[in-house]
Image 1 (cartoon, rainbow, N blue to C red):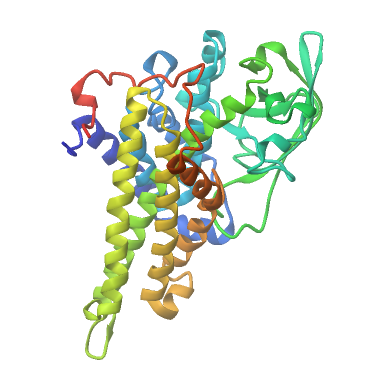
Image 2: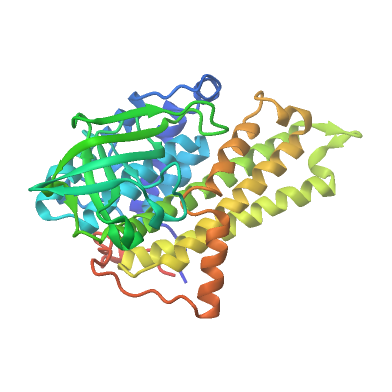
Length: 405
């Protein structure tokens, strides 16, 4: 097994690292404390091609593989989670869904400007009364000639106030539960469509999170993604992509906790020695080091399957569950290592903890992933091939672009 990164993958990692360190790291403590979202960050990510990393060049993207996408998410979340959230909703939950499910006309219309960063995209599934239970979605889509009328609301939507395109799920027949779900692209400016911002979040305070409201929003038939009733399949395939970016980002958050803890363990002295000499501190740092390595290995395995276009629901669920749990525990231990200083914003570890707490809830709660993995192990769950298979990574047949596992 060869775990060496290719020159292309290293190039992506270094480019994203340099961007995040230069454009965000010096300011993130202030932005987080004030709860400020800076729209110009999206513009710069688009200019560098980060927002189209795994999208084929024919649609305005950069054509890199999923290892490259994972490395980008790791470097972004190393600086702050809000940067990785952008990748999750814009790339993972929306652009990659259009690549997999959209018609050629839909890809040209929405995917191309998203890949270049000209337009910003997000994803709308969660509602005030429907999270893990997607079959209970209350937003409705009523057919009216060659369009649909959407009514309802979405909650906890990242980039709600700044996105241009929204991949939204509504039911054409609520009695059918998940079989009635249908996917639509809603565009900002459509009459009856409004957005708002949620205040008072525990974490990801430098990111924009909000709500969507639909009051007889007329959505043309050509804005429907897939067929009526295919929305649940589309949403679950989207979540496979979103979970991948979340888990990959958590790898970076764990590394950030490890690096911060190592630095402090060398700086701080108690009883006449660096605290890094104390075995219980070493134990916490050792757990972070182990968690980082195992999380990255699970991420690489999921990425390899994605590169080949193989369904990876089980593997992506496992990596997301494990990596996010590791990040949360690492952040908690990092605060413990920093002692009282870890309880203040003088050091970044309290922000790491606040940011890590959300990831064990969104993109499938820890409990949902526990059930998924148990059902796979027990043989109760077996994935069927998707009607619209995930396309392999561009250029994957070239060994230079592949990580061999």
